[in-house]
Length: 114
Length: 114
Image (cartoon, rainbow over all chains, first blue to last red; front, side, top):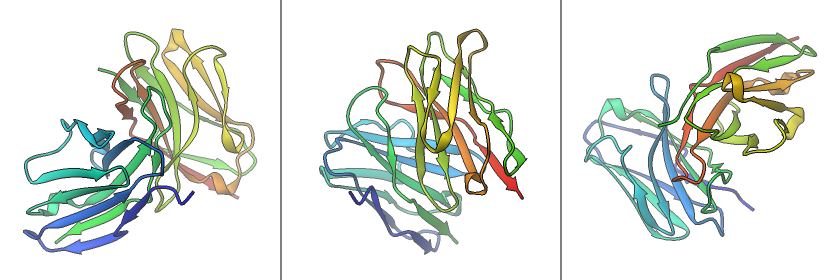
C-alpha cells in the first residue's frame, strides 16, 4: 500500500492567498483526520471525517479554514485568506472507524506564509 | 477531557544505553494509550498501544511500554538504543469507547550520541 499521500509536500505563499492542501487516505480506511503541528502548540486535531462526513471540526481555528471530503479517497483542507500565523506542518491521517484504531499519518505538508 | 504530559522535552543517550521516556496522563478512567514516533520530515508512526490486560506492551523496533494505573503513567522503554532511534516520540491518549479523538503530548526529542 502506498500509505497516506499528501500534496504538495511544501508550499510557500504570500499572505492573503488561498492555499489548498490535499490528502489521499489509505484505501479501505473510512476515518480521516487533519492535524496541524507547530513548535508552539504541538500537534492539534483540526477536523475529522467518518465515511466522508465531518464529525468534529471544533479544532478548526477560524472561518478561514475549511475542509471537504467529496469521496472516500480524497480530502482537501483550504485556507482562505492565508496569514503568516498559519505557517505550520499539516498532517493528514487515516484509520478504520473504531475506538483505539491506529492512525496512519501522511508525510505532511510544510506551509510557509510570507 | 483527557490530557497527556511528557515532562522531558529533550533527552540525550549514548548508543547502546537504555532508554526510558516518561508519559503521564489525566483521565477519569483508563484511556487508550499510544506511543508514536516521528522521524525528521516524516509523519508519525505507531510504536505500540495499550487498551487493557497485560500492563507491559511490546511494540515495533524493540520498544516496550508499561502501564501503571497507580501512577497514571505509560513510560516507553528500550534496553539498547540504536543511532537510528533518534527521533521525536509522542505519547497519546484516547477516551475508551469514545469519539476517536486522540490527544497528543508535546513530544520528547531523542538524541543518540556515539
